[in-house]
Length: 319
Image (tube, rainbow, N blue to C red; front, top):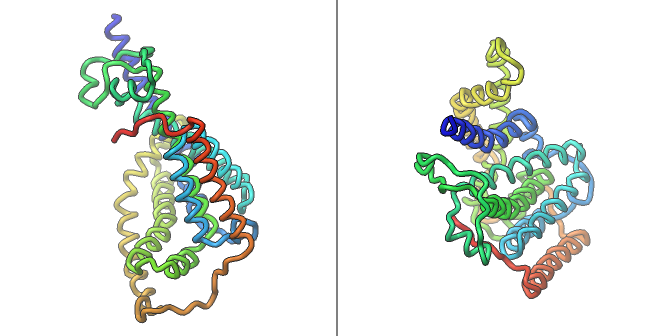
């Protein structure tokens, strides 16, 4: 009887760890929410006036600082960047969606690492490591790469890794939500980035909101046709996941059709017809950008001070 109870609890823990982030993504955030935080909406606040090149530099700086300093600095950066979402169009809504996205990211990343991290890694990450065992997995869980025991230190390790990635994603979303693809294209071109790389990035930026739009439309059509209508409303996220899987093929078809329109648009505008480009609207470097550069330099200085004080990276990364 105890063996069956261990088996049942083990699988409940497994599905909760996997299902909780998915529930937040599909039920709380939804396709519409992802579209809102990956699309540009015109507005006129400080963040919209900063040069895109400065925002790219800020994202790179956040990545560097989060990678070389202790984990709670990455957590503070995540909170600070998330708070800046209040200045965006529909800021309260974007902060709400961003918060849910951070929670889903942190939970998913932490659980993705915690059961898999080995004792040798934990010995490096936590000097004087004495495992505090939370749960012992059935032996066949090793097929999935799980370690025999789940420890409190392994969960802490997963959380530390997750806070290093969440700040990077939030800063990248900030760039996408406050600049049009054409503004970023002009900025990268003036920075002498190869046109082939720029064009790939721009197509990606344009395609991400379209993916969410097509997925949302396809899932709604399936729901209108009765998908999950005969079951409890608590199973709605499960059927949304099923609908999302069913929507993959229609979404790919729509994107392939849109690729032809993108090629025609690029040819019509004379993309790469000449070595130099002309611009109808210039993106100037203003006083606000100098202030933003000051913030970037300050972050690097603070990171250096933290390392000197012993708050450098204290955990090893594993792949």
